[in-house]
Structures are given as structure tokens and as C-alpha cells.
Length: 429
Image (cartoon, rainbow, N blue to C red; front, side):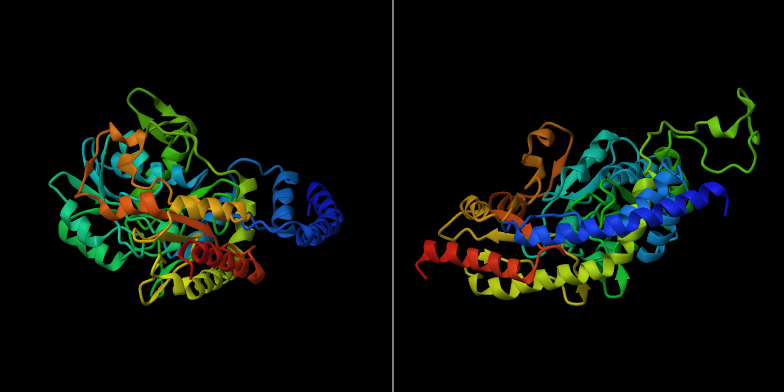
């Protein structure tokens, strides 16, 4: 160990007790605070703090050794050959689609099938890269893209299917992959909210040709902002890495090994093959991610317990509320818990949402609702399949509440009681 490393280790040992004490005291204070059940909450402790300090004190600030380590660990967890760390889940989608465009598997004007009810940055990069989103309806209970609607939506221009595992509930990937094979479609799996969700024993993100995940602050695990692209395809990996970092060459054994008619034997570190971006993850973020990934299975167990509790207790209100449905054999890892107010209910989504907010229970609508209805997408090139009835019901009647690992049993019970109180007042039951 050199002198600098020794100094760093000494400093970290001195700081650790202070940081641990801070979190212990903070936990005591939070117990005294007024109950607020948040939709999302970043959960970390001294391990993440110390990892970030390790990176900072070691001057590992930009993309470097911690990013490489994080990529390797996450690829192994998901079950793919490659993982490429980026600065957000939205960037992961942009780069995944961009890689297929660069390889010629997608070209300007091609169609990509997406669910109508989802987050905007599923469709935004499709349009930004000159492709056309095809909005198809979702299933009522799972909130996921409906395979039957995918079949209806495929035309001679369609070249890719982009299923989204909504809120951590796995899509029907086996059927979707069958459709893709039959119709010669590429598949981009959006797993941005589905950290560790499984179909059988297979982790989502390992089914498609390429996939994405988000590490946003409210998700199951976080790096503050961040995301990754996963793939088994060597060419896609190379394109994603190039696009992530200015479009430069990603692999070169020697500095002056690139030979070009106009550049000559140019320094390979400054040879640019693509029109790229700067969407890299920092080593500081990756150092946090390494610690978060170690906790993912425990985190998911708590989230599963919380969502199962909601489903069991709120089941008595099935006359008025559509609760999430999980296919047999799947493991959900809900980012948040979705609820849809049925049309025949004597109250609206807005009414129950406002009531819950007044009780310090945060709510959110189901992202963009029905995306082609959003101002940003109305006048952009797109195609819609059918009347999107379920997506528009979600637009008008759905919301989600928190189920994260910071929510205690006392708090989940509180949420159920407040929902029961509201429904009781509205129905007189």
C-alpha cells in the first residue's frame, strides 16, 4: 500500500464511526416525526457513504474502475454477458435504440411497438431517433402491454417490440419472444422499474435482444441518477459504449493502431466513429450502486411483503378497486403499488387521491396515463392500435402509492385504514 492509499484508509476509519452515529441518530428522529407515507424514498446507510468517500478520496470521480466493477456485478445478477452503465434509465433507452439504429437493425421511419400506458421516455427516444412509436393497449390487471394487441399492431414497417415491466410486474415475455421470433422483430425490454423481477427463475432484462434499467432515486435501488443497458450481443455492446462516450472507438490495443485514408495513424483515443453523446456514469455513483446491489434481494423481499399486504387487505373493496394481478410463477418487485378506481365506484381517482394526500399518504397518477393523449405526443409521428380503452381507463382512474422498504408494517396498516375510511364514507358501508 502506497502512502496515499494509507492516508485514505486512515481517513475512512476515522470518518466511519461518525457516519454510523449520524444514521443511528437520524433513525431515532424519524421515529418521532409525523407519519408521511411517501411514494419513493432513497434508502442507504454508512456503506454507501463510505463507498462514495472512498471514490472521492481516491480521486476516482469520472467513469473508471468502480463503473467497470458495477457493470460486471449487475450483468451477472441479470444474467447477461454485458452491462453498460449510464447516467439514467432514460439514457439507457436512448442508447439501446441508438445502438440498433447504428447497426442497421432499425432505420428512420421504422415502427416500434410500445404500451400506450407508460412513462414518456419509453416513446420519446423512438421519435427523437426518427422512428415511429406504435401505441398498443395494456392489460387491465397487470398494467403491462397486451400480447394480443402486439399481434394486431405489427405491420410491414414494424421492426421492434418494446415491452415495459410496469412498476416491477413482469410482462408476458415468453409469449412476446414467440411473437418476435415469428414476426422477425427485435425486442428491447424496458426494466426501468423491475429490479430483480423474475419469470420463473429468469430475471427480466435477460429475455430481449437488449434491455434497460433505471437507478433513479425512488427506485428499488439507486445511484441518485443512473441506469444500465444489458445485452448478450457483442456488436450492440460496442455501439452502446461508443454512443455513451462521444461516439469514439471503444476498444484499441495501441494508441496509433487506427489506420484511415484521411486521418492516417491517428491516436485511437480521439477517433470518433459515431455521432455520440456524453451519458457516462461516474465512479461516485457506481460505488454507491455496488453497495445498493448487495441489498437488492432484501429490499425486494420487503417490497413484496408490503404489496402482498395491500392486496390481501384491500381485496374486500374489489367492487370498487382494481388491484394489481401477478401471473402465476412470476416474481414482482413493485416500485410502487397501482390501484385503479372502477368506473362504477361512487367516487373518482382524483377524490381518493386528494383524500389520501390530506392524510399524508402520497399518490401519483399512472405516469403519462395514455401517452398519445399527452400534448408532447399528439402531433408527433405515431400510430395507435384500436381505441386504447384500458389505457384511457388507467389515465382517468389509476394511481399508485408507496410500497418501498422504508414503509413499516404500522404504515401499511395506516394506509389500508385510511382507504377503508374513505370508501366507507362514500358508500355508507
